[in-house]
Image 1 (cartoon, rainbow, N blue to C red):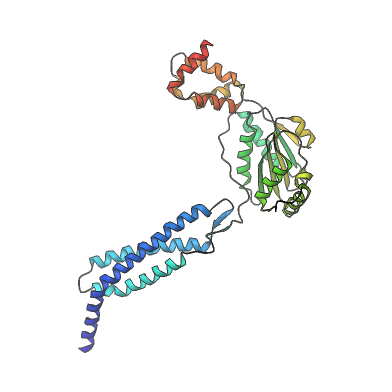
Image 2 (image 1 turned 120 degrees about the horizontal axis):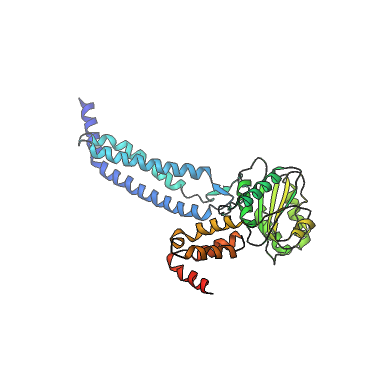
Length: 347
């Protein structure tokens, strides 16, 4: 009888203290969720390309999600319990409170939230859909050359705005899926005013080489060469080259089996002087250019009486260059641009 009374007294004590403990638990959960929000903000700042979340951070986020669900369920069970049975949940409340307190402490992550991602081999680039059968055929040809061990240097050449960069961006992203074939894919935008120093700086940032600032070009080239030589399989894409580039002066190992160089240029001579297999990208044929123009300008314009013939003349003047077609058509998109067409026709 004394045992029963003692147990009843304990349950009454638990009942009286339960609300206090439950309020403390819910307060701690709110604190934990505040830590989670701060952690989410830190993740957005730290999770850059070539980085991934630490496994302990992933597990912590999963545990925070789990404990939130468990506390919600516990609150519901207590709310549905009779007055006599509410006290039976006291141990659960205390146990969950201790776990939440531990998660709050674990969530500080003073050593950071991310680590290097060993699976990162290059930067994904923004792309657009290619237009024209000829353009798609050139992309397939470039890809076959990249997969062919006998082809080490590829020169993609053609007029400005013909789509060379667009093709290579798509290929860059496709190469990133070939982790078993390449260790790293390096994309460098060169442009007309590019210098050896700028090329070296851009390559260094992608292969984790740090220059102190007082090295000469020759020493920088040596540092890049040494790092790249440790990688047996990689691709270097030099976009928009205007004149031949000395790979030795930059620090790029001469392409061989497993090492590929791809450049885009307006000049066939550049391809030849750098020993590349030249692949020419040609403008769109008239029908392909019109289809692209129609897609970008919108049907609302083309359905206006008298506009279509004028629009075809404009599309033709773009010379089959996708960049020109897209730029002009996009600027005319929308019904209000009709007056521009009208002005163009009169002049």
